[in-house]
Length: 274
Image (cartoon, rainbow, N blue to C red):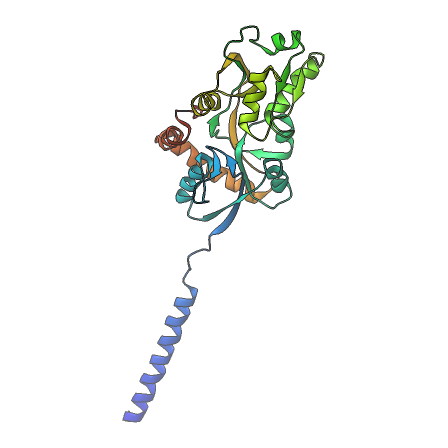
């Protein structure tokens, strides 16, 4: 075979091998793009979701979700803040994929949204009164005197629970919505403008320490609940996201990560055990 033919054949083989290798490289799987998950939360609910002194969003809810994202590299979590009343509306209308603001279960919410199976924190509601007051232990005691009780904002579970009880017991309680400032809530109780308000034990402990408030919780909880993350109902993305996050939350409970974050941000172990 002539030398020129050998060279031509070699060049042809080289070109063919180059095309094959290029094709193989093109067919090789590339790293899948991360799916962006938009999380709706607040920025003024310390210590759960708030802006620090540098204006950065932080708090228990935020740091837990950041830890979860580390375990779910297929997702990229993005936080957007809203007024509390707008978070679930944003979830319902598709502006966000997950709602995180210490949400509790109630029938209205359950009809509209998909709740996670794993609770994030314990959220048992209790009556709160002045430290020197001993005539109120239950909602029944408050109803006997047609007392005034401060609940949450219109869309909160506090309002739902107390309003439901009130309707079932003759509407003897006077309900007022929570002030935007905790100091006003405490002042109203101290002055006698209200007889009680509703909150969780860890918040009351914080008010006693931070504001030197002379208050106490009384009686048994008026509702037993946990806080959960919420997702869109009848949405494949929400269902898969819920499954993935539930699995990580379960692991974080078992390995102590969630308890550690609770102690760091909330001052104690407020993690559901089931």
